Image (cartoon, rainbow, N blue to C red; front, side, top):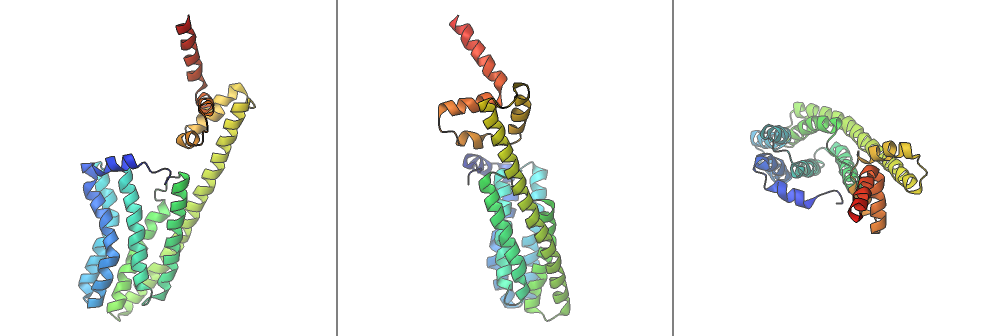
Length: 259
């Protein structure tokens, strides 16, 4: 993916402060391979304990990372991947028993697809508020859903469907927020390209070009402009647009050397 720095991820992998939170995040990937087989044994306490333990790591990994000052890009990426593998895998296994589980499954898959698309664009897909909130009712409905497999108790049914209803609402809000984030990014990206083009052609007033272009470009990763350069001349033009004062200073130093 375009905005993933693999050198940074390799460096994050060696960060000792991040080992514990990263292990907690990665452990959720095993949940779909452990909980459904356990449910087949009919051991209700064991299944509920295992499901609660796996889903609790989603709350603990971030807390521990911040406490140890072990927050990394790798940890953020691992957390997002683990969340989707865990939730989608557990939902798939529950559909034969609770057909309504197909609704959050579709919504979770949609969120995952949007996140992948946004990541390729270069958008930071760090969880928004609705994304963090939805994990609670989703986790509760998953735990009680596996309780439904093993027990005919009406309590599991009530908890499961209330959790699914709440999850569906929050997932819908989550999709809208990520979609709006992508639209906003695209609009601002278009405006920045227009300002750069105007600065190159001299259409921007010189007194305002620094404020309009230099200020906006600093709010985004300049790498996306450098990657699109097709020649050294174009790269130099972009550098001059970004920081005209530095370019002037460079020219003055060159003249002094020649003298």
